[in-house]
Length: 542
Image 1: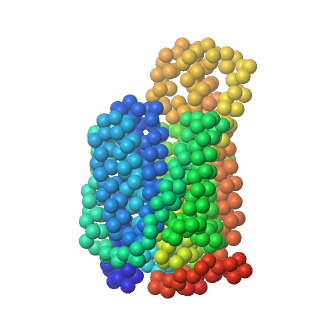
Image 2: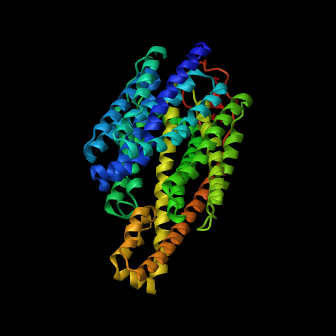
Image 3: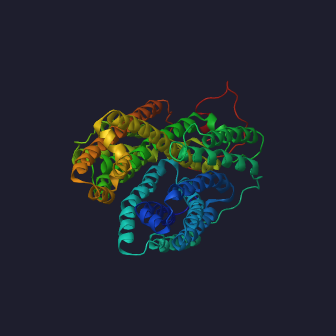
């Protein structure tokens, strides 16, 4: 595919980017619309499953499709992915119950996993590593663009039209992308038939699914020490050992273990996991601070977060261009983690008196750091493996980033809840305020700081109280906001430490020259012995 005319490559990339934009927009548009959807379908108890089901399906599919696309080509999987995602989106719009919506979101997730996994790999098929930087930057910026358009449009739709259109509005984009790829994308000659690693696929699925469920439910649905969470972790460990046992014995493993002998592959994915923790930590908990601690509206929260997304998009695109021009990539991930960690550290100094301007500046610093990091990891991994393993290597990057986000949100959520409970307990124990709270059920609702983001509910509670208790309520809201601010700044501080670890790891990342061609001779050689192993051995055939 590298030999195709440049104009045809551009058209193929536009089609692939359209497919990615279709999937990304459908993910981001749901966030602002979901409260209205949940209200109509009366499914608040299953709220988290709308996200969890999508995440599980997309994570498992991405890693499985990575290997299969190396054998059967990208075209079939990206077409099937668009088809499944389109069907899932259409069905989500028809959902009449929460159970239906959750099932249909799972169908969406299967399609999204195929689209995301193959889309980034297509860049590796079409362009040499030296050329990929600018395209990886543009591909990464699609997520930023979708974050700008999706939430705003989703909010507008639920306010002015039927919520079902949230899932239907972008269906034409999917249809156009499907037709473009079907017509333009070259057909793939299937390689010599390889046996499919069915047991490896089963065991890696049984490893990922319980792990993600445990990290999602732990500290929220169940205590971390509860039986369900411990059983899920135990199941993950058992399945993981069976997976390792299987992969060492099959001829065509779904995730070749010798990839982890490559230092660049391993260190890049560890760094990628830490970046995922920081990125999702900022995206998830900064709006919580703005709306809960500062008392701003959801609209203002979106406006404050928008510069971060915009800077992430611009920096990612510029970084990609510079990588392609200079052939250097390590410096960008070093700078990215340094800037990102600095921004996260500055977030830890915010308090109830923080101005919107300062919050915007802090979050912009984080966005610039994310933009510098994201294109580099995928490029480094792709450049570090042979072309025949491009699909499985690229999908591993998506998996580790997703795991990082899940792990990060779970750990940070636990830290936030513990800090919050301790702070609230210290403020109410053996105090007059604590006695008034115990005597009034309406005031007891204020002990859950999440209510700070529901301004309508706060107004209703205030109107139900006597003038004397309204003063008490004002004091309690101030106390809850201070406790929330304290707990969230703890989260940002610990996240900055995690990013500092990632920054230090970047110095262990060996930078090798970006190849100028994909036309490499694939040699079937046994894995080198420890004494033969050198860091550059994986690239000697380039």
